[in-house]
Image (cartoon, rainbow, N blue to C red):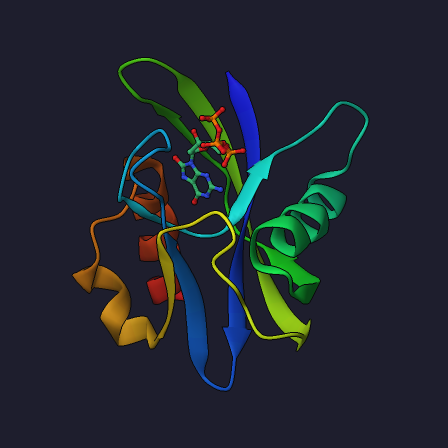
Length: 126
Ligand SMILES: Nc1nc2c([nH]c(=O)n2[C@H]2C[C@H](O)[C@@H](COP(=O)(O)OP(=O)(O)OP(=O)(O)O)O2)c(=O)[nH]1
């Protein structure tokens, strides 16, 4: 089981979503940016670190949504979603195929990693 933090980053009424690259696991699926929690690291610190590494932006972690456990064919994941705000920086797709700023209504138009679907649904129900 891998433990992964991910961020719903909100800015000016939009949400930042990222498409995994074709070289990654779950190729070309859309996800909320984030990554694996390292030993001894808090979920929130992991998120700030991963978002800086992947997108070169600084965020503030605000609140937490429900965690999601999901079994893919070849690995299982526990995904910890947080709502966050953008502090500074313009995102750059340093590891992803691309990113987009979308409205909440547009979230359902994307081909999400399966573990993210309950997160999208919870976010839309808030
Ligand atoms: N960052 C992120 N990862 C997600 C989400 N949903 C989801 O199933 N995942 C999966 C994809 C990856 O297997 C794992 C995140 O790890 P990572 O981003 O550090 O891993 P990676 O693909 O760079 O590396 P690896 O798993 O190939 O070793 O969690 C999500 O919303 N955000």
